[in-house]
Image (cartoon, rainbow, N blue to C red; front, side, top):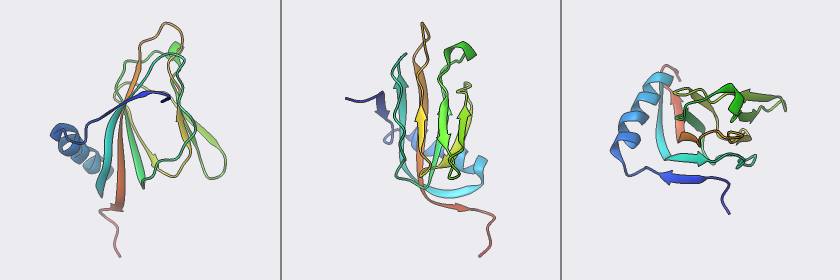
Amino acid sequence: MNDFLMLDVCDREFFRDYLFNKIKDSLDISSELQRVYFNLQWPGRHGKLHKDGCDLTALLFVSPWDPDWGGFTQIMLPSNQITVIPPIQNRLICFPGNFPHKGYAFSGNAPKRISLAFKMINVKNRNQSC
């Protein structure tokens, strides 16, 4: 059983090309898109701590958010320190895909938590000189 619902949008040009290029420009990187999909979590349906099979994960929070709802994203750093990020609507977070992370659902009588995930491979800084 899945911990959340997922909608793959790799075949939709708006997400695959337009938004992905905006993210790459914003981060000043070149990379290939491995996958792009929406996650939907309903109240009480938390994710599990996991690693992604990619170089870099970019997560765009889509849903409106209220601090009372929770719904944080937890990321474990190599030092075993835990970073907790609130899912503020339209916030984009990026982290290495091999960092363990977990998305928490909203709580109580809150709406569903929706995020848009971009999984990237072969990531290179555009300004990096070799």
